[in-house]
Length: 103
Image (cartoon, rainbow, N blue to C red):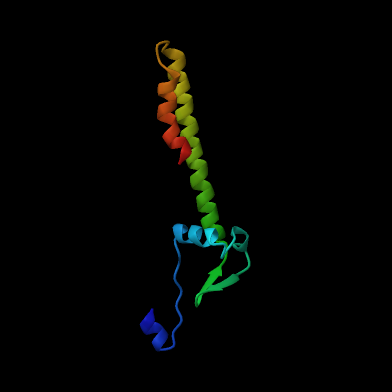
């Protein structure tokens, strides 16, 4: 990047979700800035150009829906198992479900 700058080129990079979270915590950016229109923020000589990516938003929504469906299926399976096995424990079923539910 330094070499590109020296010869007059500009470049584009992407920041990660943890980096975005850090900038939000530092109150440099707000989630509302990620809109359909381009928004610019500058800090310490670094220019951030923010824009909501509708394709990525669709991918995330689909992923979330898929995960929700898998967790729901697991819940139904656990409930069915509990109904069919009188000695089965709810706590054990919950233990299997909780890690998937939180993520």
